[in-house]
Length: 325
Length: 289
Image (cartoon, rainbow over all chains, first blue to last red; front, side, top):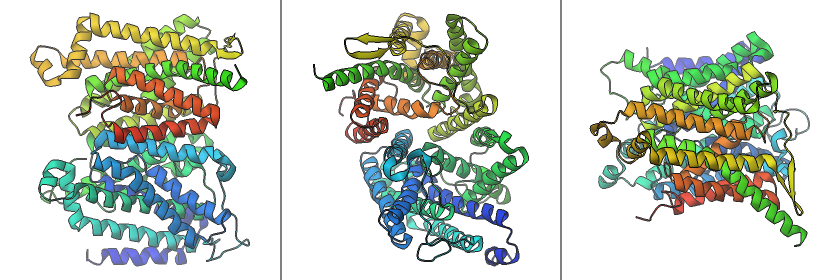
C-alpha cells in the first residue's frame, strides 16, 4: 500500500483542479507549491550544514532577469528564464567558489551570503530607473489574455499544474541527491572537511556542485513567482528577510526529509492566511510574531523539524539523521 | 577650494561621524561574540526597541532626555540578559548555526512584536538639533553628538575591560574558555555581565541613533546587516579590527553616496566586504598565517 501512496497522491493532486476550482484555495495552493519548491531548493544544500543567507539574492535574480528581459529586450520567458537560471548559477559560482576555496564555513559562510543578499537587494533598489526600485515591477501583459509564448495564463488551473510539475521535479532532484555519492561526500565534509579531503573527496568541487544546483533551482522559483504573480518588488523576492523566511520554513518542516520543506511551506503560509482572514489588517505582524516564537522553540526543542521528528518516532531504530546541522 | 572639494570634505567628515556610531554598534556585537561565542542576529532589533523606549519616554511621557536615555540603556541591558537566559543559554552546547538561527527567530519576533504594539508608522523624537556651519560645510550637530558619545562609551568599556576584575575575566574568557573555568572564574556570571554590557551598548546606540533617524519596526534591517559585516570584516571578536572596519565601511558608504546614490554606497561596501573575505578571511588586522 505504501508503495502506491505517492502515485495515488500524485494522481489526486493532478486531478484536484478539475474537480474543485474555487480561485482562492487554488491560489493558495499555487503559492504553497512555488514556495515549497524554493524551500526544497534551499534545503538541498542546507541539510549539509551549508547555511546560505544568500538565497533571497538568487530568487531576486531569477525574478528580475526574467521580467527585465521580457520588458526591455522583448525576450520570451522561454529564453528569459534560462538566462535567469544562468545568471543565478554564475553568481553562485562567483561567490561560492572563493568561499569554498578559502574554506569559509559556518558563521562566516552565512555572513558572506548575507552580504550577497544585501548586494542584490540594494542593486535592484538603486537601479530604479530600470527596475522600478522598491515600488516593484510588473512584466507587461501580452495582448491581454493567456499566451504560451509569453508564459502568461489567466486561468489558475494551468498555473496550478505548472507549479505542481516544478514542485515534483524539485522533490525528484532532492531524492536523486539523497541517493547519490554526492550526499555521502557532503555529509563527510560537513562533519570533518580535512578528514573528507584525506579520504579522497574533492571538497571544493562537491560543495560547489550542490551550491550551484541549489541556486539555479531557487532562481527558477523566482522566475515562476514573477510569471504567476505578475508583480515583483525587492522585498517580496529578494533580500535578507526572504532568506530568513526560507530557513525558517525549512527548519519547521524538517531539513533531513524530502517533504520537510513542503510541510514547512504549508504550515507557514496557512498560518499567515488564517491570521490574515480572521484578524484582517489587525493581523499585520502577528504571523511573523508566531513564526519567530516557533522558530526559537523549534531550534531549542525540535531541531529536526516536525516531519523529521515524526519520522524518528515512527522508526525509532532507523538510521539516525545526518550530522546535527 | 572648489565646490566639489567642499562636498568631498563634507562627505569625508560625515563618514567619520557615521563611523563612530557604527564602531559603537560593532563593539557590542564583538564583545558578545568574543566572550560567549554566539552572534546575536537580533542585535539591531534590541536597538530598535531602545529607540522606541526613547520615543515613548521623551516624546509621549515627557521624561527629561537624560533620564530617558539612562532608563533606555538599563532597559536594553536587561533585555540582553533576558535574551541570554531564555535563548542563548539553552543552546550553548548546540551547533553554532542553531544559535544563529534561534537569534534569527528572535529578530522576527521582536520586529513583529513592535509592529503589533506600535504599528508601522515612522516616529521621531520631534527634537531638532541645530546644524553646524563650518565655512561652506554643513555638519549635523546630532551626528557630532553621536560621534562623541560613541567615543566616550568605547573608552568606558575599554577602561572596564582593562581596569576591573570582571573585565579581566571577560578578556581572559575571550582568549580561552576552557581554562578559565579551571581558574575559578564563574563562566555563567561572566556571560551574564557580558550580555548586560552588550545590551547596554545597544541601548546607548539606540539613544544616539534616535536623534538622527525615525524609528519604525524595520529600522533594524537598515543597519543590522552592516554591523555584522563590520564585525566580520574586522575579525569577529577583534575589538580594534571592528573599530577600523567601521570607519572603512562608513567612508565607503558616505563617498559612494556622494558620487552616486546612497544605495550604491551600500553596494560598494557589501562588495568590498565579499572581496575582503577572500583576501583576508580572518579580518582586516589579522596576521597572515
